[in-house]
Length: 252
Image 1 (cartoon, rainbow, N blue to C red):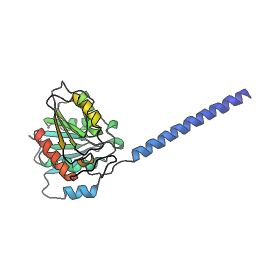
Image 2: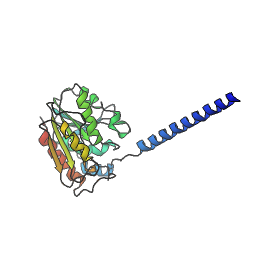
Image 3: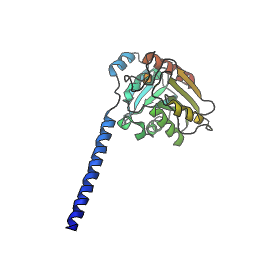
Image 4: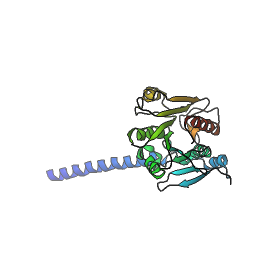
């Protein structure tokens, strides 16, 4: 009888454990499948189709999108997308930079989360040795993960570009350039954490607030939960961002 009770207890415990694991897997699946999808119709409208396009778009083995200026480029920019955002949403930003002579690389993230591919930039950096000046950055979570990569890697990267993001890695004593951009109406960026982590910025860091911009305005994926209402269009915010980046990094 006592052995029967022990067996029953073990089965009960095992059943509870399996139920909890199943619930966690289900919850994880639901969370990862709920993401912001790129607005392809709007992206196509913005970029258009031109025979005189100044860049060529291609795809690397791991899914990274490349926007390579036809005239060649000595400067490259690796970009990590925001958390739970389909990476294609940032094509207009990178395509417009490519039109200005910067080779741009949009890294695809597993489950749309850069935490699962922090070293995603390695594929690009290793395959394009002809590029002399490298910069890395990203939007929101992507920017923070790009900073993490920069803090740990041995590649010669000259600067970091953060869009509505911050770095938990301390670059205050590191000789790199840093550009931080966010919108005045951003309701997603944790400004308290952003302010706390500004001490990690190098001394020559540049910060710019885009008036009327919000968190989602750096890409085309529709409104984002908890975000503020922008008083400017996404394309306006992107064009301002392109101009600021061009002022920040060399194109030759």
